[in-house]
Length: 102
Image 1 (cartoon, rainbow, N blue to C red):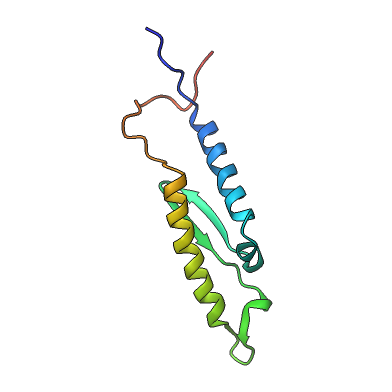
Image 2 (image 1 turned 180 degrees about the horizontal axis):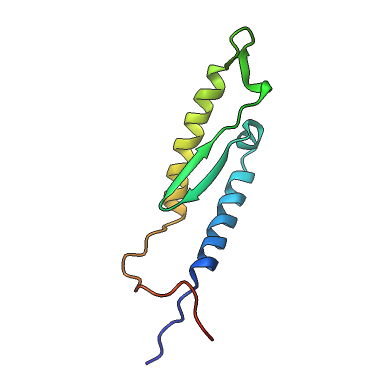
């Protein structure tokens, strides 16, 4: 019986990371705010690093509410798109080593 060869976990992660980078890079507003994403485990974690350009109240200083709202919108959007595009749990896939000896 010919069984399909399982794709090594490292290859799956590389494809996942490349797809995420392409998706994030295609949205200028995400790039403008400097938002980045980190897929760890089964979760997509978002981060918006501090930038002087995000300050809305210079006397506090506090990040502008619009930037915070945009960050929340971006994270909700990306979670929806990412969970739709990248199905990362293969319940029916058999357990296999992370590498195959050839």
